[in-house]
Amino acid sequence: MKILQVLTYYRPHTSGLTIYVERLSKALAARGHEVTVLTSRFDNKTPRDEVADGVRVVRIPVVVRVSKGVLMPGFGFAATRLVRSHDVVHLHLPQFDAAGVALRARVFGKPAVLTYHCDLQLPPGLGNRLVNQVVHAMNHTAALAAHRIITYTPDFADHSPFLRRYRGKVDTILPPVELPAANPETARRLAEGIGDRRPVIGMATRFASEKGVEILLGALPAIFDRHPEATVLFAGQHRDVMGEQRYYERLAPTIEELRAAGRWHFLGTLTPDEMAAFYPELDLLVVPSLNSTESFGLVQIEAFMNGVPVVASNLPGVRQPVSMTGMGAIAEIGDTDDLATKMLEVLDRPDRVAGDPAEVARRFTSDACAASYEGLFQALAAT
Image 1 (cartoon, one colour):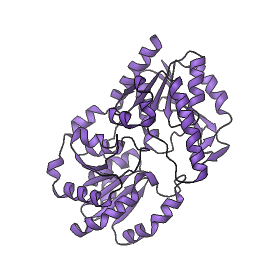
Image 2 (cartoon, helix red, strand yellow):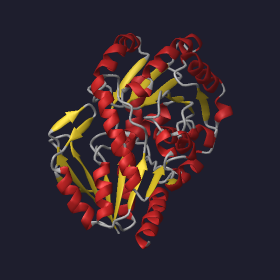
Image 3 (spheres, rainbow, N blue to C red):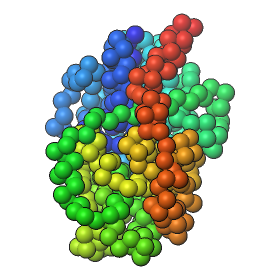
Image 4 (cartoon, helix red, strand yellow):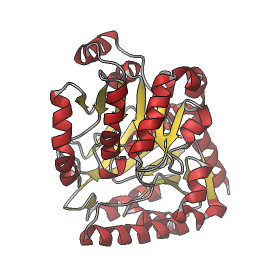
């Protein structure tokens, strides 16, 4: 089967959505399918057309950036050509261009599946409000044209105003999660940076306003009162995150004080090998997300696979990994005091949140995710 994946950003961009599509695409290719990714060439250093890990990646040049989005005049022509030559179209929302691609799939009689990863909520501002409204309208057009809509959990589907409008054609598929075996040398370098400080609290994400970095910062004084040698490892891009420079500048003075005291370490964007070494160094991972731009949090599963507990926000979808496994605690959204309380409960009694890392890993393999999509694609193609 020839499968076309369509999304705004793909590798080397790093986000939960791009990692999801990369893992799924590789797994589908490994199952014998011909997979093409249609995306933006947001970085001019990347090839316009390449094959990586058995997946063809077609990147369309970007002419203008609008907030976190892009305008690509050549996208329509490429989309028409690729939709016609593929058996099924798989769209990943939120995405401005999804509506046009979904309508093309209808015109050419190709099944269109839409995976709704999260809501789009850009930072405050008149321009961003306009972008939000336009993309929201395009997402609804895509959903109307799609044959099926996929999300990660029933919890998110039930609470999403967007998905509730299309509940009759919404299915859930657990996301693909994988990590290589940790390299001992990489683990040693990470451990050297920490020294003897414990406990180690991890956060793995882009430095973005919806991720709740300031909520963790507000909770840390209570943690340091109980655990004076505690430290934070932040894995992910923290500088020059699109649309988030002001947010970073606002929190930077507080973080710099913590860095000077050895209580905060920026690790930057880590490779899969480095992420595999990152988790075993942690005593706790925190996911203090603030809104529905986060719908699950793949990093929670990666932590569980390494036996690391998580404290996550009480957001639909985001609370599901802890609820499904019992490997952590759920804190009220945006509540620094409750986050601190739940972090201390987990740190002081880790035995209460111990789970089965092997079972977690089994449920979330990339091949299991790909097999579910494969069955859906084949069923739609047969109708």
